[in-house]
Picture 1 (cartoon, rainbow, N blue to C red):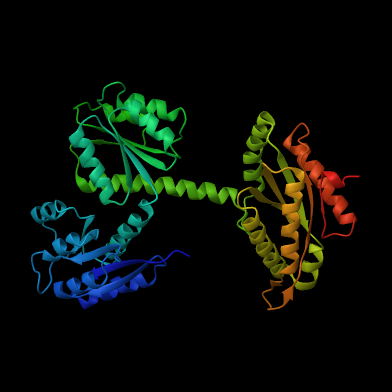
Picture 2 (spheres, rainbow, N blue to C red; picture 1 turned 30 degrees about the vertical axis):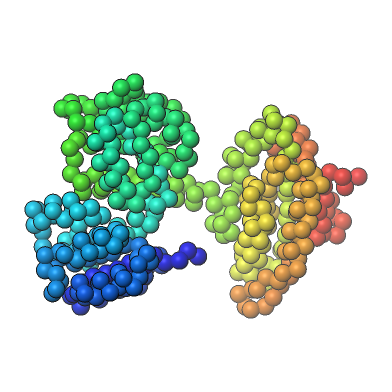
Length: 422
């Protein structure tokens, strides 16, 4: 489990501090240290130099009534979200110009949840790369700085041709922000080219333009952009649009993940296995790379359900699936259904594959599963392993399944491979 991110909360109101503390205490990713004054904040910043991930800071403190605490925290290199009890446009502009992450008016519990959501967004953004495409050095640098302020990893390109090269070389890019008017390839042409390879559900594109063309936003979106902003844009609108698009992308990925995962064990399901497996099979046929297919089945699993109940059976499946996943983490592994699992092991010949599955068999058989009742139960599995590609993946798996059947007939807790077929 990843270590919690430590944040500094500077707030002199006991009531507000209590609400923030309650929200933080119910979050698995964050922990907080609290200060009620600028002096206390200075002490904490000195004591925890380099340990603080971000800060929530009230603008009005007894010893810092004019927002001095913001400068102190930013000087310490800590990303800062400002909390304020009242809205003032001139003050907002002044504070935003300092380089804070966000500006939140304290208007109720949701405000604090939103502020902490910004902190969590900073955590998530660390793993996301963004590509900024703009031929203007000033605009490109400005937009890149705004994104870095939000925790993103930022790459930059001066035109569409350069952008495509960077995109193809960086799998972590999930968001592209592109200007319209550029030499070599304008923003709309860039979007068209990108959408030949990347779907909107895999890569977000936001178009930008300073040109006064009312139809340009529609032109961007009709050609595959997810969103559009006119320049010059409001800082908060920019960050909100970016956040909304990235969170939509993450939600789509979560839905896809759920559709491909077995609900009980968390292993990949049959649908995912065959979608990925067919491509892997074709690649191995074309490159003449060895590919081992494995079909394995828990021994006497029906008896487990009959004697101990289905809750115990579910526990056995979950534990064994986790053991198998750890042992086959670099390969394609899935639950086929019931007590049966399948795997594809590219790059291994049959001896290597059968040996690996045999070691996993021994490990599973030697480690008891602790049932919900507290009882310990030893289980085993049998498996068939073949490198005979046949004429399709289905036929290769059918042969592995035939070997599995022979292993069951031979007494169970056995692995049979191509050399054992006679």
